[in-house]
Each structure stands twice: as structure tokens, then as C-alpha cells.
Length: 169
Image 1 (cartoon, rainbow, N blue to C red):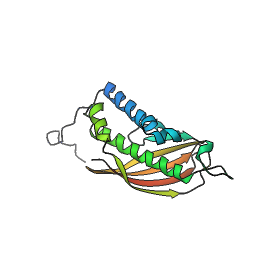
Image 2: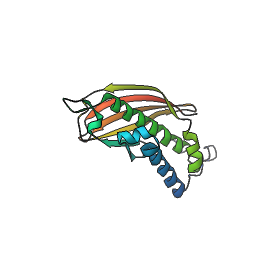
Image 3: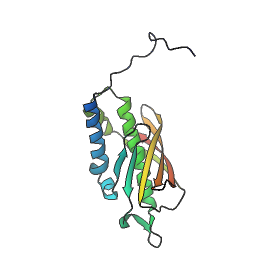
Image 4: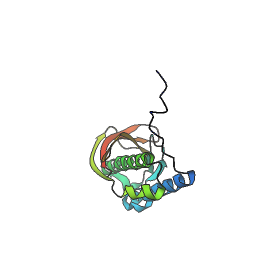
């Protein structure tokens, strides 16, 4: 393998400052935890903004039970958690793609993001005290982001997987 010729390599864009990155992350947390009131009702919290695997987490509560006899998490909550993790992954990826833009410029792009397709595979009963949904980008195009998501309980048991597509432009 030969080293890449710096004369032919695409120029690297300047990265936003650490202060701008902190502002962007603060906005992402605010949007996902409070401005999306359904997420707030479900108790979703941003657990990670790692570009490789952004995640949300939430605690089990009686309001989230779908099967009253067994205390299992409702399937709609599982689906919502996976969808939210996929959307978070798309927004974090947009922030990375436009890393030279300010937080305000990137946030303006978020207004265009929306779910256009979602598939959920329920693998195990939603039993646990704490759940984490993680999203991963499989493709970030100019108009569509494709994601894969997982939901696990606090022991690491895989409860469900999903894949989603999000319009981003």
C-alpha cells in the first residue's frame, strides 16, 4: 500500500471549535430530551453522542408496561426507542458531515430530518430496569440516512433490533 499523495488528497475541512461542538451537543440533548415531548414523556435521555454509536437510555416505569401480568415493556415503546436512536444517529452524522459549520448552522439542518421507514424485530421480552437503544449509520447520502438500531436491557440482553431510513434534506 502506498501513502496517499497530499497533492491529490481532498482538502480537510476545519473542524468546529470545542465550544461550538459543546453547543451542538447541548442542543441535541435539549431536542431529544425535552423539545420532543413524547420522548420526555417516555423518559428518554441521551446516553451517548459518540458518532460511531449514539444512544438513548430510559428506566422502566409502570406507564411503559404493555403486558400487565408480566410487566413487559410495551412494543410501541420499544419501537419508539429504536426510532429515536436512529434519528439521533442521523443527526449526529449530519453534525459530523458538516463539521466545519457552527452549531447554529447544523441545527438548522435538523428541521428537515424525519422518519420515512422503520422496521422492528422483537427478539426477547422487554423485561428489565434500564434500557439502552443505540443507533448506527449504515449509509449517509445527500437525501437519505440509513440506520441500524439495537435495544438492550441493563444486563446486555438484546431485546429488539431495527433498521430505519430518515429523510435528511
